[in-house]
Amino acid sequence: MNHAPTIGIDIGGSKIAAGLVDRDGRVLRRAQAATPSDARDAILATAVRLGREVGSGTAVAGVGIGAGGVIVDGVVTSATALLTGWAGTDLVVHFATALGAAAAAALNDVHAHGVGEAWCGAGAGRSTVLVIAAGTGLGAVVVLDGKPLQGAHGTAGHLGHVNAPAAGDLLCSCGAVGHLEAISSGYGIVQGYHRLGGDPRLGDARHIVARAATDPDAAQVVRTSATALGSAVGGLITIIDPDVVIISGGLSSAGRLWWDEVRTAAAAATLPLVARTPIVPAGLGADAGVIGAARFLRQTLGSVSVKGES
Image (tube, rainbow, N blue to C red; front, side, top):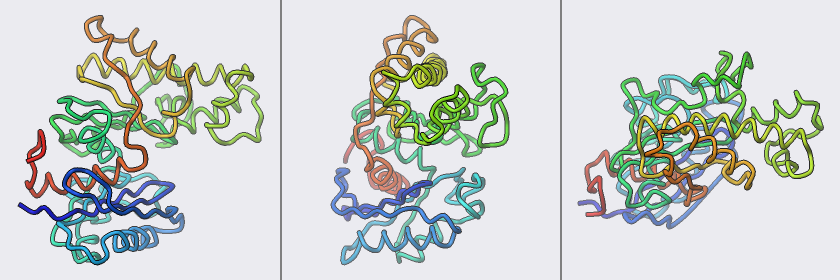
């Protein structure tokens, strides 16, 4: 069994993080940089540089990569325009070659966050974990006995692109209308606030949420957004019956009003038997994706037990 640490890389739309992760999930070294906005090659070069930085002078078991987009067998099969030229990228081949790693594995970034949280975060010790990533966009993943449910086509967890009645005919980032992301994401909160006539200078959902106690428009959009998300989460609870629901991402720090509305709407949308399913904040913060990507690499190698440390 390879007890050497693993490099974990988390490539997001706004930042790239890398870490050297030991077999118990501890991050031994960290590095981070803003995600370049110009092209795919710049994103890859930044991620490789960070990987080399954290892995310098250390024999590693391999590299795990979590990244935006639909990823199948290490290849990005589909991605939004937010990551220019990202679709078609073979992440496994690129990082194994660039970092001289003996092994590499890649998965969607939200899936990586879920694996990390289920391993040693807020879902540790639980068999069925539902993780909701609520930030600029919306994503989700079901982690069963430590492994992410990726689906037949790698698209499992695209929570933001389910239909939501409250979204009406609002345009989603994917180009369709009426999707949950258009109303319940950070971007959706900003747009909703502006539609109500709120201060046009506020372009960050965190600032709008912070004003909810004194600004009626902010309070209304937060309630509407959180209720729609909670209803969707409640439906998932009924279908999946998870041990716990974990909410990560920027909106997880949105405050009591947002959390109360999410939990209330979720409970109202479930069967009574599962209405008390705990909905809790994530526990690993910015390390979740790095830890989850490293864990996924070890799972791919078969060097750890899926249900616990060996």
